[in-house]
Length: 425
Image (cartoon, rainbow, N blue to C red):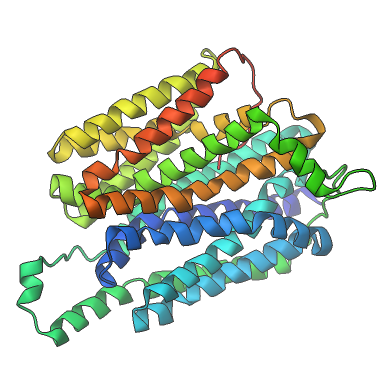
C-alpha cells in the first residue's frame, strides 16, 4: 500500500476511535436530559448506561466470529451501519418521547461500536511498519480521549436547555404546557444525532471505497481445535484465580467510571445548586483531567511501579469520594472532579495485570477481561437506586466499594514489578 494511501487508511481507522469515544461520553449528558424529558427516576435514567454497556458485553465475541468469516473491513462496515441506524432512530424516539425507544436506539449504536472497537486495534497494527504499531495505537487512542473531552462540552451546549422547572412550577402549568415543554426538551437530541448518524454514514462510505489490507491471524485461541474445544479452554481459564480477580476488578472499574461520570451533572445540580449547562462545563474539565491523567500516569510509571501507582490512586479516589459525600456546595464537585484524574490509569493497568502469565491463552483471557465492561451496565443502576432511596450524594458511596476492591487487587500484585501495558479503553 503506497505511503499516502496508508496515511489515509490510518486516518479513517483512527476516526473510529473518535466515533465510539464521542458516543459513549455523551451518556453523562443524555442521562440528566432524558431524566427530565421522559420524567424518570434516577434508577430509570441509569439504564442509558445499561443499554450501552450490555451491548459491549454481548457483541465482542459475535463480532469476532463475524469478522473471521467476512473480514475486518466487513465487520467495520456493519458496525458503522448499526451505529448510524441507532443514531437516526433518536429522531422518531424523540418525536414519540419513548424512553424504551431511546434505549433500543442506544443499544443499536453500541452494538455497532462493539464491532468497531473489536476491529480498530488490530487494524491499526497492520497499517504500517510493525515497529510503529504501538505508536499508531497511542496516536489513535489520543483521539478517543479528545472525543471524551468534546462530547460533554458539545452535548451540554446543543442538547441541554438549562431549563429545569421545579415541582411547584410544574404544578402551575396546564397539561398542554407541560407536554409542550417536555416535547421541546426531547426534540433537542434530534438534530445532534442526525448529524452524528450522517457523519458515521459518511465514514462508512469512505471505508467502503478504500482498499484496506486483510489481517491474517495466527494461532487464534478463540477458535476450537481437534484437541481442545473452546468451552474446555474457557473452563481452564476460569480456574485461573489471577485472571478471574482481574475480570472482577475491571467490572468494578468500568462500573465506577460509568457511575461517577454519568451522575456528575445530577450531582452538581443537587449538591452544589449548579445549572445543567454549568455542570456540563465542569464535567468537560473533569474529562480533560482524565485525558491528562493518562499521559501523566504513563510518565510516572517510568519511576514508580505501576502496581503501586494503581494502589495509591485507588486510595486517593476513596478519599476524594468521601469528601464528595460529606462536603457541600462546589467543594464536593471539586472532589468529584479529582476522581476522574485518578481513574485514568486504571483500565489498562488492571487489564495488563489480569492477563499476565497467560501465554498462548492471552487472547481468550483478554476477551474475558473485556467482558468485565458489563460493570458499566450494573453499577450505575445501583447508584440510581441508592439515590432514589436517599439522595444523589449517598449514591457515591457505591464507587467507594469499587475502588476498595481494585485496591485489594493491586495489593495482591504488589510484588509484580514489570507489566506490559495495553491500550486504554
